[in-house]
Picture (cartoon, protein in one colour):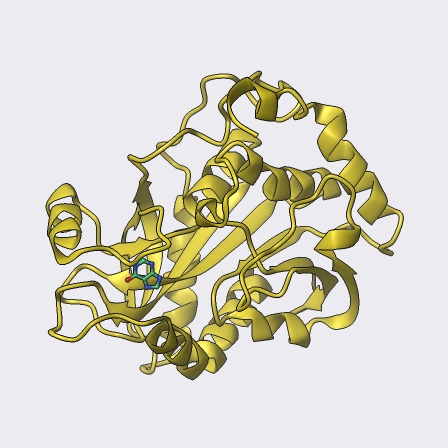
Length: 282
Ligand code: HPA
């Protein structure tokens, strides 16, 4: 679907049907939503008393097409908080329009979540960063393509023209850095700007040089539509990027998905411990 054809279905009721289906199947509504990026899915297995619901079974929801993304909503408790995990997210490169990518976060909001933690694997553009560093997203740059909020505004979620100067909630950024400090020296934390690129190809070295000039510290193919959707409906947002590789052209070798997956797997334990601590302190 393209253009207006793809937009006319997105009524408040459209999202509410997804949320009502889920609310009928969970004992308590979630307060915190967690979107797990490539290779960071295992945390979903740590929720207590989990209730697992396949994306395919949720009316009006999207279907995950990437192998490394599981395609399930998992409800349960983590660090004592009521949490819902999206194990598997949706990307523009899969063929979705940006407008469709609003759906998951809107449904999470309708379930009751007031805070969303967005995680991703990203390439390090800033040459002072190293593989394994965790970047707290301070801000984002998305120069390519439509806003997920394009189309008729749904006032039940938010205003037509909305502020994004504090899209990544300053208090949560400080909290994340604080938690890492408390956990110790194995955490090399950064705070920087996430630059969105549509993929699925990794970037060219020339694109990475341009991104660096424009102010990007890390580059990735996800997260930005989710953050915008969350900002529109008044959710608090924390974004955490795991540096799985130096961006294209920084090192002489080519990039590969295997490198990304391997680095994510290697850091998963550390990343999860940080998320647990952050959720506990929220
Ligand atoms: N570029 C885009 N997306 C990514 C990268 C990258 O270098 N690494 C992990 N996700």
